[in-house]
Length: 348
Image (cartoon, one colour):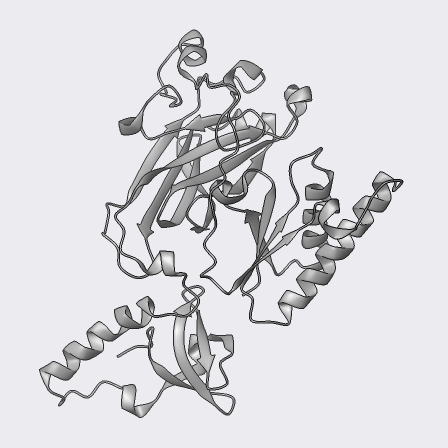
């Protein structure tokens, strides 16, 4: 029987061992040691304890117990919030979005491709692009509930060569959930002129105008079919104006998530007289101190609330992440909890 969640294991090349809490990918397991620490270890560097190994002569009831054990272990994991543990059926939808980096100079602006998980389930996704009749891989990963993730960026020249985007994935929840059909959709973009701002509309997911794609069986005024004229396209794309940020009360059950508010009024008693550069330095100093502290703790995710503003703080924060912490993964935080102004960094 292979290594699975709940298995008791020993380290092959070191003293000690622990319990398998989960898997970060198909090669790496997350091990909870006897000291209560969670450490990633290659599966090839683990061995099952003899008590957890499969015995062909064991009774059928013991086999059934071993088959059920992983599901129970998954439900009681300490790093899963109370809201995640509760049974829930799938609600919401999965969308694809294209967002101009700078809509003031659209003709030379890069375009970001986003997966939007506007649902209560996690999504393991794979995305591809069709060029000259064949598909090429873009990105693979996980998008948490109520978040959006930029998976690629294209120049105007590059995106003009693409006829379709493909998005597939499996949807699930930690704990108890109702299985749903795998997600699979192809979005045709041949009729879109990305040089024209009329295709990008105000929406519920970004603070700037974007082109939002929905599944064909969920079409409404925001969906984008692929066989219409340019005039038809501009009429059926979402016309909502003045969309407000979605903000909901956050659960405090997940002790492995930390929030840091970088608004200057939260960091100093008064910022009167401070130059913009001085304010930015204070905010970035707080960002670095909080991140370094979290890296030394058991915190698994940290959210930096930077607001929207002119985008400078968000830009500088992510530039530092790319330069000084290239091993860390980050994305926009939940748009339902934080609106458009927060970045979530994965530490574990």
